[in-house]
Image (cartoon, rainbow over all chains, first blue to last red; front, side, top):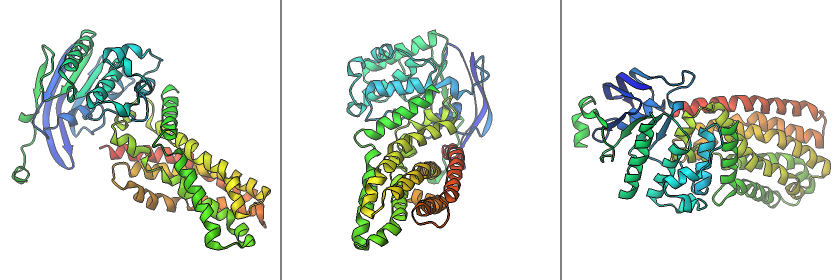
Length: 211
Length: 222
């Protein structure tokens, strides 16, 4: 399995964000996307799952299911946690595993993995920011998808949870999965390659810098 | 099927819990209809004549009340992204959300209508005909409203835009809904004529609503 991009370009609101981005990530490999604010890190991830239109270039997943789009084979973890405050921890996870997956799964295992098994019946409204983040990470474990696209996955996580996330990522890569992560802080993950968007993104117009 | 029952159950569960919109619609319906006799005076003949129209108007406003949050809430907490990229077709996802909304706001209106009809001097046959027209017509209101809810998803104060966009589109439903209810009470046209047109309007909106709403959501996410 291999996710490859050639000459990707992105336009948002009529302005070119980046152009000429190429990379290739094979199964078991991870790619960290770096760049200043506004360089297009999130746009690149959203483009991969089909939430932002590709303005130029090509993006292909070789060795995946030809019947499905890239987004349908991927987990996307955005800035927001996609949780409903009035539903309990378990109900939130149950919904996403039912919606994203085909079969009923045991939710005890993913909840234990992120350390929320004791809070399964608590409404998500009472969770802290870090706990909410962990609950949305549990979604990646409950339903198996080969491609993970993570946008600032470590934000709000404490040191112990970041270590735990490193373990979860390593297990995903060891199983032949692909991972793309946009982040400012270093991930606790060895052997990850880097893609820096600063070199390919459009320079800021002078008036934007002064604004 | 599994993703769709998941959405249906989730939305219904959220609607009936604290902060959900399930009871708001039916309470609003009750308040609006109760105010009418105070405004119009205790003229029983007049109330009987305008009763179906008042109930239909109140049902129309009540079913639009919670609609603006339908997609906006999912957009704000990030749930809309996985819904858009899921394996279930977006049109069907939208239809499942519409059904959940109707079951929690439209259906309670239909159930409450005969009781509230007493305030407007509606007798049993008139109330029966009215319940039937509301049962058939309120799904059309919800599914036409889906389009406005999808267009207003990224806007603040989207509720106002929703009302402006959606209310004109509901005019045919209102005309034939009230006509059928009046036909059963007063005549002279038979109940069946406007009622079958109302059924047709509902069937058409069940198809067009999810298609248009899904197209609007896809466009909006760009």
